[in-house]
Length: 527
Image (cartoon, rainbow, N blue to C red; front, side, top):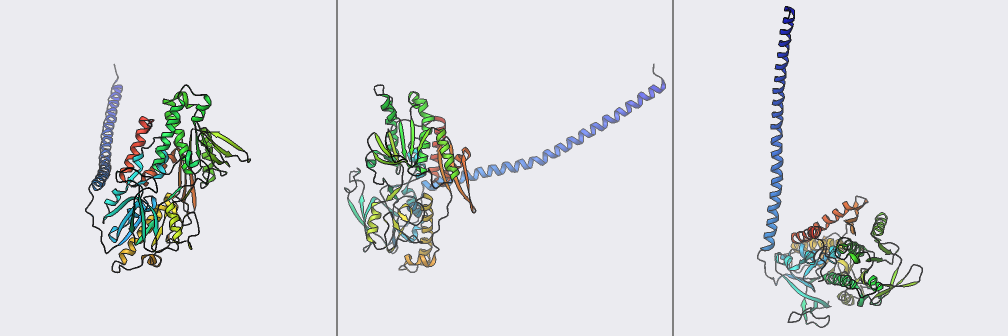
Protein backbone atom coordinates (compact mmCIF):
# COMPACT_ATOMS: atom_id res chain seq x y z
CA UNK A 1 0.00 0.00 0.00
CA UNK A 2 1.03 3.54 -0.69
CA UNK A 3 0.98 6.19 1.96
CA UNK A 4 -0.92 9.42 1.38
CA UNK A 5 2.37 11.20 0.80
CA UNK A 6 3.36 8.60 -1.74
CA UNK A 7 0.01 8.85 -3.45
CA UNK A 8 0.36 12.63 -3.61
CA UNK A 9 3.83 12.28 -5.06
CA UNK A 10 2.54 9.82 -7.63
CA UNK A 11 -0.27 12.20 -8.64
CA UNK A 12 2.29 15.04 -8.94
CA UNK A 13 4.52 12.88 -11.05
CA UNK A 14 1.65 12.01 -13.39
CA UNK A 15 0.74 15.68 -13.65
CA UNK A 16 4.35 16.59 -14.48
CA UNK A 17 4.53 13.83 -17.02
CA UNK A 18 1.34 15.04 -18.65
CA UNK A 19 2.80 18.53 -18.89
CA UNK A 20 5.97 17.25 -20.55
CA UNK A 21 3.94 15.17 -22.99
CA UNK A 22 1.77 18.16 -23.89
CA UNK A 23 4.85 20.32 -24.41
CA UNK A 24 6.47 17.68 -26.63
CA UNK A 25 3.29 17.40 -28.66
CA UNK A 26 3.14 21.18 -29.10
CA UNK A 27 6.84 21.20 -30.06
CA UNK A 28 6.23 18.47 -32.61
CA UNK A 29 3.29 20.38 -34.06
CA UNK A 30 5.34 23.56 -34.21
CA UNK A 31 8.31 21.82 -35.86
CA UNK A 32 5.95 20.18 -38.33
CA UNK A 33 4.52 23.57 -39.13
CA UNK A 34 7.99 24.99 -39.67
CA UNK A 35 8.90 22.06 -41.93
CA UNK A 36 5.76 22.54 -43.93
CA UNK A 37 6.53 26.24 -44.17
CA UNK A 38 10.08 25.48 -45.38
CA UNK A 39 8.72 22.96 -47.89
CA UNK A 40 6.31 25.61 -49.16
CA UNK A 41 9.27 28.02 -49.50
CA UNK A 42 11.37 25.46 -51.41
CA UNK A 43 8.57 24.45 -53.77
CA UNK A 44 8.35 27.80 -55.68
CA UNK A 45 12.13 27.85 -56.04
CA UNK A 46 12.15 24.36 -57.53
CA UNK A 47 9.30 25.30 -59.82
CA UNK A 48 11.17 28.40 -60.96
CA UNK A 49 14.33 26.38 -61.62
CA UNK A 50 12.36 23.78 -63.58
CA UNK A 51 10.72 26.50 -65.63
CA UNK A 52 14.08 28.08 -66.42
CA UNK A 53 15.60 24.76 -67.47
CA UNK A 54 12.51 23.84 -69.51
CA UNK A 55 12.43 27.29 -71.13
CA UNK A 56 16.14 27.14 -72.02
CA UNK A 57 15.75 23.66 -73.50
CA UNK A 58 12.66 24.68 -75.46
CA UNK A 59 14.39 27.85 -76.69
CA UNK A 60 17.46 25.90 -77.78
CA UNK A 61 15.33 23.31 -79.57
CA UNK A 62 13.31 26.03 -81.29
CA UNK A 63 16.42 27.88 -82.42
CA UNK A 64 18.02 24.67 -83.70
CA UNK A 65 14.85 23.77 -85.59
CA UNK A 66 14.76 27.24 -87.12
CA UNK A 67 18.38 26.93 -88.25
CA UNK A 68 17.65 23.55 -89.82
CA UNK A 69 14.56 24.90 -91.58
CA UNK A 70 16.40 27.97 -92.87
CA UNK A 71 19.23 25.79 -94.12
CA UNK A 72 16.81 23.64 -96.10
CA UNK A 73 14.61 26.52 -97.29
CA UNK A 74 16.70 29.51 -98.44
CA UNK A 75 15.00 32.72 -99.52
CA UNK A 76 14.75 33.92 -103.12
CA UNK A 77 17.94 35.68 -104.21
CA UNK A 78 18.43 38.88 -106.17
CA UNK A 79 19.78 38.36 -109.70
CA UNK A 80 23.10 39.69 -110.97
CA UNK A 81 22.99 43.48 -111.33
CA UNK A 82 24.94 44.93 -114.28
CA UNK A 83 25.34 48.19 -112.39
CA UNK A 84 27.25 46.50 -109.58
CA UNK A 85 30.98 45.76 -109.53
CA UNK A 86 32.12 42.15 -109.96
CA UNK A 87 34.12 40.74 -107.06
CA UNK A 88 35.95 37.48 -107.77
CA UNK A 89 37.07 35.22 -104.92
CA UNK A 90 39.84 32.75 -105.78
CA UNK A 91 39.82 29.66 -103.56
CA UNK A 92 37.50 28.09 -101.00
CA UNK A 93 39.92 27.95 -98.08
CA UNK A 94 39.76 29.73 -94.74
CA UNK A 95 40.30 33.25 -96.08
CA UNK A 96 38.05 33.24 -99.16
CA UNK A 97 35.24 31.27 -97.51
CA UNK A 98 35.21 33.64 -94.53
CA UNK A 99 34.95 36.58 -96.93
CA UNK A 100 32.04 34.87 -98.71
CA UNK A 101 30.29 34.06 -95.45
CA UNK A 102 30.45 37.65 -94.16
CA UNK A 103 30.20 39.62 -97.41
CA UNK A 104 27.02 41.55 -98.18
CA UNK A 105 26.41 40.40 -101.75
CA UNK A 106 23.80 43.10 -102.26
CA UNK A 107 26.71 45.45 -102.94
CA UNK A 108 28.56 43.24 -105.44
CA UNK A 109 28.19 40.62 -108.13
CA UNK A 110 30.23 37.84 -106.52
CA UNK A 111 31.98 35.03 -108.40
CA UNK A 112 33.80 32.17 -106.64
CA UNK A 113 36.48 30.16 -108.46
CA UNK A 114 38.01 27.01 -106.98
CA UNK A 115 38.99 23.49 -108.09
CA UNK A 116 36.95 22.11 -105.18
CA UNK A 117 33.33 23.00 -104.40
CA UNK A 118 33.62 22.74 -100.63
CA UNK A 119 35.34 24.27 -97.64
CA UNK A 120 37.60 21.86 -95.75
CA UNK A 121 38.04 22.15 -91.97
CA UNK A 122 41.74 21.30 -92.09
CA UNK A 123 42.45 21.12 -88.30
CA UNK A 124 40.52 17.83 -88.15
CA UNK A 125 42.01 16.37 -91.33
CA UNK A 126 44.44 14.09 -89.41
CA UNK A 127 41.42 12.49 -87.71
CA UNK A 128 40.05 11.45 -91.13
CA UNK A 129 43.18 9.47 -92.01
CA UNK A 130 42.39 6.75 -89.46
CA UNK A 131 38.59 6.89 -89.45
CA UNK A 132 38.10 8.82 -86.21
CA UNK A 133 36.01 11.28 -88.22
CA UNK A 134 34.37 10.59 -91.57
CA UNK A 135 35.50 12.67 -94.52
CA UNK A 136 32.16 14.31 -95.27
CA UNK A 137 31.83 15.57 -91.71
CA UNK A 138 34.48 18.29 -92.20
CA UNK A 139 33.47 19.25 -95.75
CA UNK A 140 31.09 22.20 -96.07
CA UNK A 141 29.62 22.57 -99.60
CA UNK A 142 30.25 26.12 -100.81
CA UNK A 143 26.90 26.26 -102.56
CA UNK A 144 25.16 26.01 -99.18
CA UNK A 145 26.81 29.31 -98.24
CA UNK A 146 26.20 30.83 -101.66
CA UNK A 147 22.50 29.95 -101.69
CA UNK A 148 21.87 31.89 -98.48
CA UNK A 149 23.36 35.16 -99.73
CA UNK A 150 21.16 38.14 -100.62
CA UNK A 151 22.27 38.22 -104.25
CA UNK A 152 23.01 35.28 -106.51
CA UNK A 153 26.63 34.07 -106.36
CA UNK A 154 28.21 32.27 -109.29
CA UNK A 155 30.60 29.38 -108.79
CA UNK A 156 33.10 27.89 -111.26
CA UNK A 157 34.71 24.56 -110.39
CA UNK A 158 37.98 25.38 -112.09
CA UNK A 159 41.51 26.49 -111.35
CA UNK A 160 42.76 29.96 -112.18
CA UNK A 161 45.86 29.44 -114.29
CA UNK A 162 46.62 32.97 -115.53
CA UNK A 163 45.80 36.62 -115.00
CA UNK A 164 45.87 39.67 -117.28
CA UNK A 165 46.04 42.60 -114.88
CA UNK A 166 45.71 45.21 -117.64
CA UNK A 167 42.42 43.74 -118.90
CA UNK A 168 41.35 42.51 -115.45
CA UNK A 169 40.84 39.10 -116.97
CA UNK A 170 41.32 35.64 -115.48
CA UNK A 171 41.93 32.38 -117.32
CA UNK A 172 40.19 29.38 -115.78
CA UNK A 173 40.90 25.73 -116.53
CA UNK A 174 38.12 23.26 -115.91
CA UNK A 175 38.91 20.20 -113.83
CA UNK A 176 36.35 17.93 -115.51
CA UNK A 177 35.54 17.28 -119.16
CA UNK A 178 32.13 17.32 -120.83
CA UNK A 179 31.53 13.73 -119.65
CA UNK A 180 32.22 14.59 -116.01
CA UNK A 181 35.63 12.89 -115.85
CA UNK A 182 38.55 14.51 -114.06
CA UNK A 183 41.38 15.74 -116.27
CA UNK A 184 45.03 16.36 -115.50
CA UNK A 185 46.31 19.92 -115.01
CA UNK A 186 46.99 21.55 -118.35
CA UNK A 187 44.56 19.29 -120.26
CA UNK A 188 41.21 20.87 -119.33
CA UNK A 189 39.11 23.34 -121.29
CA UNK A 190 39.75 27.01 -120.56
CA UNK A 191 37.35 29.88 -119.87
CA UNK A 192 37.98 33.59 -119.40
CA UNK A 193 36.13 35.85 -116.96
CA UNK A 194 36.54 39.50 -116.00
CA UNK A 195 36.68 41.13 -112.58
CA UNK A 196 36.52 44.59 -111.05
CA UNK A 197 37.89 43.48 -107.69
CA UNK A 198 39.93 40.34 -107.01
CA UNK A 199 40.52 38.56 -103.70
CA UNK A 200 43.22 35.88 -103.86
CA UNK A 201 42.90 33.18 -101.20
CA UNK A 202 44.24 30.08 -102.93
CA UNK A 203 46.39 28.96 -100.01
CA UNK A 204 49.63 27.09 -100.58
CA UNK A 205 50.85 23.72 -101.70
CA UNK A 206 53.17 21.24 -99.96
CA UNK A 207 56.82 22.23 -99.90
CA UNK A 208 59.09 19.26 -100.59
CA UNK A 209 62.24 21.44 -100.39
CA UNK A 210 63.44 19.74 -103.56
CA UNK A 211 63.91 16.40 -101.78
CA UNK A 212 64.19 13.63 -104.41
CA UNK A 213 61.41 11.04 -104.43
CA UNK A 214 58.94 12.86 -102.18
CA UNK A 215 56.43 13.61 -104.93
CA UNK A 216 56.52 10.00 -106.15
CA UNK A 217 56.52 7.99 -102.92
CA UNK A 218 55.33 10.08 -99.95
CA UNK A 219 51.78 10.90 -98.88
CA UNK A 220 50.87 14.52 -98.17
CA UNK A 221 48.30 15.79 -95.66
CA UNK A 222 46.84 18.92 -97.23
CA UNK A 223 43.60 17.98 -98.99
CA UNK A 224 40.83 15.44 -98.50
CA UNK A 225 42.27 13.33 -101.33
CA UNK A 226 45.50 13.09 -99.31
CA UNK A 227 43.61 11.77 -96.27
CA UNK A 228 41.92 9.12 -98.41
CA UNK A 229 45.28 8.09 -99.88
CA UNK A 230 46.86 7.79 -96.42
CA UNK A 231 43.98 5.68 -95.17
CA UNK A 232 44.27 3.31 -98.14
CA UNK A 233 48.06 3.08 -97.86
CA UNK A 234 47.84 2.45 -94.10
CA UNK A 235 45.37 -0.40 -94.43
CA UNK A 236 47.25 -1.86 -97.42
CA UNK A 237 50.42 -2.00 -95.31
CA UNK A 238 48.64 -3.68 -92.41
CA UNK A 239 46.83 -6.22 -94.61
CA UNK A 240 50.01 -7.03 -96.56
CA UNK A 241 51.86 -7.62 -93.28
CA UNK A 242 49.28 -10.24 -92.28
CA UNK A 243 50.37 -12.68 -95.01
CA UNK A 244 52.31 -15.72 -93.77
CA UNK A 245 54.70 -16.01 -96.71
CA UNK A 246 56.68 -12.79 -96.07
CA UNK A 247 59.84 -12.43 -94.02
CA UNK A 248 59.97 -10.83 -90.61
CA UNK A 249 62.11 -8.02 -92.03
CA UNK A 250 59.50 -7.27 -94.68
CA UNK A 251 56.72 -7.40 -92.11
CA UNK A 252 58.59 -4.94 -89.88
CA UNK A 253 59.10 -2.64 -92.87
CA UNK A 254 55.42 -2.65 -93.75
CA UNK A 255 54.46 -1.87 -90.15
CA UNK A 256 56.88 1.06 -89.79
CA UNK A 257 54.85 4.30 -90.09
CA UNK A 258 56.87 7.49 -90.57
CA UNK A 259 55.79 11.13 -90.21
CA UNK A 260 58.10 13.83 -91.55
CA UNK A 261 57.49 17.20 -89.91
CA UNK A 262 57.16 18.11 -86.24
CA UNK A 263 54.61 20.88 -86.60
CA UNK A 264 50.99 20.64 -85.36
CA UNK A 265 49.88 18.62 -88.41
CA UNK A 266 52.63 16.01 -88.03
CA UNK A 267 52.16 15.79 -84.26
CA UNK A 268 48.40 15.35 -84.53
CA UNK A 269 48.70 12.70 -87.21
CA UNK A 270 51.21 10.75 -85.11
CA UNK A 271 48.83 10.99 -82.15
CA UNK A 272 45.86 9.78 -84.21
CA UNK A 273 47.96 6.93 -85.61
CA UNK A 274 48.90 5.85 -82.09
CA UNK A 275 45.24 5.85 -81.00
CA UNK A 276 44.33 3.76 -84.05
CA UNK A 277 47.03 1.28 -83.09
CA UNK A 278 46.03 1.03 -79.42
CA UNK A 279 42.24 1.19 -79.75
CA UNK A 280 41.66 -0.79 -82.94
CA UNK A 281 44.65 -2.69 -84.34
CA UNK A 282 45.21 -4.46 -81.03
CA UNK A 283 41.63 -5.79 -81.25
CA UNK A 284 41.47 -6.81 -84.92
CA UNK A 285 45.15 -7.54 -85.67
CA UNK A 286 46.52 -8.81 -82.33
CA UNK A 287 49.37 -10.70 -84.02
CA UNK A 288 50.62 -7.49 -85.70
CA UNK A 289 49.93 -4.75 -83.18
CA UNK A 290 53.11 -5.28 -81.15
CA UNK A 291 55.25 -4.93 -84.27
CA UNK A 292 53.89 -1.55 -85.41
CA UNK A 293 56.37 1.30 -85.00
CA UNK A 294 55.77 5.05 -85.35
CA UNK A 295 58.66 7.44 -86.05
CA UNK A 296 58.50 11.23 -86.32
CA UNK A 297 61.35 13.01 -88.12
CA UNK A 298 62.02 16.73 -87.55
CA UNK A 299 64.91 18.80 -88.92
CA UNK A 300 64.76 21.37 -86.11
CA UNK A 301 66.03 20.81 -82.55
CA UNK A 302 62.47 20.48 -81.17
CA UNK A 303 58.99 19.61 -82.33
CA UNK A 304 56.25 22.25 -82.18
CA UNK A 305 58.67 25.21 -82.31
CA UNK A 306 55.82 27.76 -82.01
CA UNK A 307 54.65 26.34 -78.65
CA UNK A 308 55.85 27.00 -75.11
CA UNK A 309 58.88 24.99 -73.92
CA UNK A 310 56.82 23.25 -71.21
CA UNK A 311 54.33 22.03 -73.82
CA UNK A 312 57.15 20.79 -76.05
CA UNK A 313 58.58 18.78 -73.16
CA UNK A 314 55.13 17.45 -72.26
CA UNK A 315 54.52 16.35 -75.86
CA UNK A 316 57.88 14.62 -76.10
CA UNK A 317 57.36 12.81 -72.80
CA UNK A 318 53.86 11.71 -73.91
CA UNK A 319 55.26 10.41 -77.19
CA UNK A 320 57.93 8.52 -75.26
CA UNK A 321 55.23 6.89 -73.11
CA UNK A 322 53.32 5.99 -76.26
CA UNK A 323 56.49 4.49 -77.80
CA UNK A 324 56.60 7.03 -80.64
CA UNK A 325 60.21 7.63 -81.68
CA UNK A 326 61.17 11.28 -82.29
CA UNK A 327 64.25 12.01 -84.42
CA UNK A 328 65.15 15.69 -84.11
CA UNK A 329 67.97 17.49 -85.95
CA UNK A 330 67.43 14.87 -88.66
CA UNK A 331 66.94 15.83 -92.31
CA UNK A 332 65.36 13.63 -94.97
CA UNK A 333 67.66 13.64 -98.00
CA UNK A 334 65.88 11.18 -100.31
CA UNK A 335 62.71 9.10 -100.36
CA UNK A 336 62.61 5.78 -102.20
CA UNK A 337 59.85 3.24 -102.77
CA UNK A 338 60.50 1.26 -99.58
CA UNK A 339 63.06 3.30 -97.66
CA UNK A 340 64.24 6.86 -97.08
CA UNK A 341 67.66 8.35 -96.39
CA UNK A 342 68.27 10.75 -93.51
CA UNK A 343 71.17 12.90 -92.44
CA UNK A 344 71.77 12.35 -88.71
CA UNK A 345 72.79 15.08 -86.24
CA UNK A 346 76.44 13.94 -86.46
CA UNK A 347 76.43 14.35 -90.26
CA UNK A 348 76.29 10.64 -91.08
CA UNK A 349 73.57 9.16 -93.28
CA UNK A 350 71.23 6.25 -92.63
CA UNK A 351 68.68 4.41 -94.71
CA UNK A 352 65.42 3.56 -92.93
CA UNK A 353 62.76 1.19 -94.31
CA UNK A 354 59.10 2.20 -94.09
CA UNK A 355 55.62 1.06 -95.07
CA UNK A 356 53.88 4.45 -94.93
CA UNK A 357 55.56 7.87 -95.06
CA UNK A 358 53.50 11.03 -94.50
CA UNK A 359 55.14 14.34 -95.49
CA UNK A 360 53.76 17.11 -93.23
CA UNK A 361 56.24 19.94 -93.64
CA UNK A 362 55.93 23.57 -94.77
CA UNK A 363 54.13 25.15 -97.73
CA UNK A 364 55.07 26.96 -100.92
CA UNK A 365 53.14 29.20 -103.28
CA UNK A 366 50.60 27.99 -105.81
CA UNK A 367 51.32 28.35 -109.57
CA UNK A 368 48.67 31.08 -109.97
CA UNK A 369 50.40 33.11 -107.25
CA UNK A 370 53.61 32.99 -109.27
CA UNK A 371 51.63 34.18 -112.31
CA UNK A 372 50.33 37.16 -110.34
CA UNK A 373 53.82 37.91 -109.08
CA UNK A 374 55.08 38.00 -112.67
CA UNK A 375 52.45 40.64 -113.50
CA UNK A 376 53.82 42.93 -110.79
CA UNK A 377 57.45 41.87 -110.70
CA UNK A 378 58.74 45.30 -109.67
CA UNK A 379 56.87 45.22 -106.34
CA UNK A 380 56.64 41.44 -105.85
CA UNK A 381 60.19 40.54 -104.89
CA UNK A 382 59.57 37.56 -102.60
CA UNK A 383 59.14 34.13 -104.18
CA UNK A 384 57.31 32.64 -101.19
CA UNK A 385 54.01 34.43 -101.88
CA UNK A 386 52.25 37.71 -102.56
CA UNK A 387 53.56 40.72 -100.68
CA UNK A 388 50.66 42.71 -99.24
CA UNK A 389 50.45 45.96 -97.29
CA UNK A 390 48.74 46.49 -93.94
CA UNK A 391 45.37 46.70 -95.73
CA UNK A 392 45.91 43.30 -97.44
CA UNK A 393 46.31 44.97 -100.84
CA UNK A 394 48.72 43.20 -103.20
CA UNK A 395 51.69 45.50 -103.65
CA UNK A 396 51.97 46.92 -107.14
CA UNK A 397 48.48 45.73 -108.12
CA UNK A 398 45.23 47.63 -108.53
CA UNK A 399 42.00 46.33 -106.97
CA UNK A 400 43.63 43.07 -105.85
CA UNK A 401 43.73 41.77 -102.27
CA UNK A 402 45.36 38.62 -100.94
CA UNK A 403 44.91 36.75 -97.67
CA UNK A 404 45.70 33.46 -96.01
CA UNK A 405 48.70 31.25 -96.76
CA UNK A 406 49.37 32.83 -100.17
CA UNK A 407 49.83 36.31 -98.68
CA UNK A 408 53.04 37.50 -97.04
CA UNK A 409 51.52 39.76 -94.38
CA UNK A 410 54.08 39.23 -91.63
CA UNK A 411 51.98 36.63 -89.84
CA UNK A 412 52.34 32.85 -89.65
CA UNK A 413 50.38 30.78 -92.20
CA UNK A 414 47.63 29.74 -89.79
CA UNK A 415 43.93 29.09 -90.29
CA UNK A 416 42.94 31.65 -87.67
CA UNK A 417 45.06 34.31 -89.39
CA UNK A 418 43.26 33.68 -92.69
CA UNK A 419 39.85 33.66 -90.98
CA UNK A 420 40.52 36.98 -89.23
CA UNK A 421 41.78 38.50 -92.48
CA UNK A 422 38.60 37.33 -94.21
CA UNK A 423 36.38 38.91 -91.56
CA UNK A 424 38.36 42.15 -91.65
CA UNK A 425 38.26 42.45 -95.43
CA UNK A 426 34.56 41.57 -95.80
CA UNK A 427 33.59 43.99 -93.03
CA UNK A 428 35.43 46.91 -94.65
CA UNK A 429 34.26 46.06 -98.16
CA UNK A 430 30.67 46.01 -96.88
CA UNK A 431 31.00 49.35 -95.14
CA UNK A 432 32.78 51.13 -97.97
CA UNK A 433 30.42 49.77 -100.62
CA UNK A 434 27.40 50.88 -98.59
CA UNK A 435 28.90 54.35 -97.94
CA UNK A 436 29.59 54.84 -101.62
CA UNK A 437 26.39 53.32 -103.03
CA UNK A 438 25.58 56.68 -104.62
CA UNK A 439 28.96 56.79 -106.33
CA UNK A 440 29.54 53.60 -108.35
CA UNK A 441 32.88 54.88 -109.59
CA UNK A 442 34.33 55.16 -106.08
CA UNK A 443 37.79 53.66 -105.75
CA UNK A 444 37.42 51.12 -102.93
CA UNK A 445 41.07 50.18 -103.24
CA UNK A 446 42.05 53.70 -102.19
CA UNK A 447 39.15 54.35 -99.83
CA UNK A 448 39.96 51.30 -97.74
CA UNK A 449 43.11 53.10 -96.57
CA UNK A 450 41.32 56.40 -95.97
CA UNK A 451 38.42 55.01 -93.97
CA UNK A 452 39.78 51.83 -92.40
CA UNK A 453 42.25 50.87 -89.75
CA UNK A 454 45.04 48.50 -90.82
CA UNK A 455 44.53 44.80 -90.26
CA UNK A 456 45.95 43.53 -87.00
CA UNK A 457 46.01 39.89 -86.07
CA UNK A 458 44.88 38.90 -82.58
CA UNK A 459 46.10 35.46 -81.57
CA UNK A 460 43.45 33.20 -80.08
CA UNK A 461 46.03 30.66 -78.97
CA UNK A 462 47.26 27.33 -80.29
CA UNK A 463 45.89 23.83 -79.80
CA UNK A 464 47.22 20.41 -80.76
CA UNK A 465 46.11 16.84 -80.12
CA UNK A 466 48.97 14.55 -79.07
CA UNK A 467 47.21 11.17 -78.69
CA UNK A 468 45.94 9.08 -75.76
CA UNK A 469 43.08 11.56 -75.29
CA UNK A 470 45.55 14.30 -74.38
CA UNK A 471 45.95 17.72 -75.95
CA UNK A 472 48.05 20.82 -75.38
CA UNK A 473 46.95 24.46 -75.36
CA UNK A 474 48.90 27.70 -75.46
CA UNK A 475 46.33 30.44 -74.85
CA UNK A 476 46.80 34.21 -74.46
CA UNK A 477 45.49 35.78 -71.26
CA UNK A 478 45.92 39.55 -71.00
CA UNK A 479 49.69 40.10 -71.25
CA UNK A 480 50.74 36.51 -70.64
CA UNK A 481 50.08 33.02 -71.96
CA UNK A 482 48.37 30.14 -70.20
CA UNK A 483 49.72 26.69 -71.02
CA UNK A 484 47.88 23.47 -70.31
CA UNK A 485 48.08 19.83 -71.29
CA UNK A 486 46.27 16.61 -70.49
CA UNK A 487 42.82 15.06 -70.62
CA UNK A 488 40.94 18.21 -69.57
CA UNK A 489 42.69 20.11 -72.36
CA UNK A 490 41.61 17.35 -74.76
CA UNK A 491 37.95 18.09 -73.98
CA UNK A 492 38.62 21.80 -74.41
CA UNK A 493 40.25 20.98 -77.78
CA UNK A 494 37.10 19.12 -78.82
CA UNK A 495 34.72 21.87 -77.75
CA UNK A 496 36.86 24.55 -79.42
CA UNK A 497 36.89 22.74 -82.75
CA UNK A 498 33.15 22.06 -82.58
CA UNK A 499 32.51 25.76 -82.09
CA UNK A 500 34.81 26.69 -85.00
CA UNK A 501 33.08 24.48 -87.57
CA UNK A 502 31.28 26.53 -90.20
CA UNK A 503 27.77 25.16 -89.74
CA UNK A 504 25.43 23.31 -87.39
CA UNK A 505 25.44 20.49 -89.92
CA UNK A 506 29.20 19.93 -89.62
CA UNK A 507 29.18 20.29 -85.83
CA UNK A 508 26.46 17.65 -85.57
CA UNK A 509 28.27 15.26 -87.92
CA UNK A 510 31.62 15.59 -86.13
CA UNK A 511 30.02 15.13 -82.68
CA UNK A 512 28.16 12.03 -83.88
CA UNK A 513 31.40 10.63 -85.35
CA UNK A 514 33.11 10.99 -81.98
CA UNK A 515 30.20 9.24 -80.24
CA UNK A 516 30.16 6.49 -82.87
CA UNK A 517 33.90 5.89 -82.48
CA UNK A 518 33.53 5.66 -78.71
CA UNK A 519 30.88 2.93 -78.91
CA UNK A 520 31.84 1.06 -82.10
CA UNK A 521 35.50 1.90 -82.75
CA UNK A 522 37.00 3.09 -86.03
CA UNK A 523 36.12 1.70 -89.43
CA UNK A 524 39.09 -0.43 -90.54
CA UNK A 525 37.79 -1.15 -94.04
CA UNK A 526 39.82 0.04 -97.01
CA UNK A 527 38.20 2.84 -99.00
